Length: 188
Image (cartoon, rainbow, N blue to C red; front, side, top):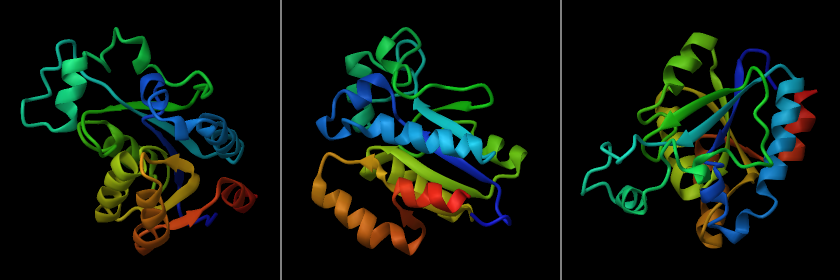
């Protein structure tokens, strides 16, 4: 990785009830955990981005699309055990956890403040789903002039074709797209 950028690995929406809803996510937490371990060893910042809402979901109105289903299911609140980060992704001392309110990791979260305070200029994106948090975060981060990398085997989507198009055609316009092993090798 280039020394001109201070880098953070973003692990997004890897919460128990999110991961458990998508069979394609089997193995994803373990792959991301390997990336996180390598990032920490290289001195990079690891930031977990979780979706979370106040009890009763007052942040979610009737026009909030997918999020109205979250509200109606009563999930992703502080008392929801499924809102916890997946057990296969241990949070280590020094890791940062920010809570978002919509698709983008920046929406309603402290991510912008944390990245500015830490001088972070390069974001490495992982998580699920690719057409949700990864796409939305990539677009907003690109508009904020971050350098970007997407770890292709560090994200999954409900639709294999959408996954392919995003990784092969859309994301390369604004980000490097690398496999986890390839990215780890570049950290040395």
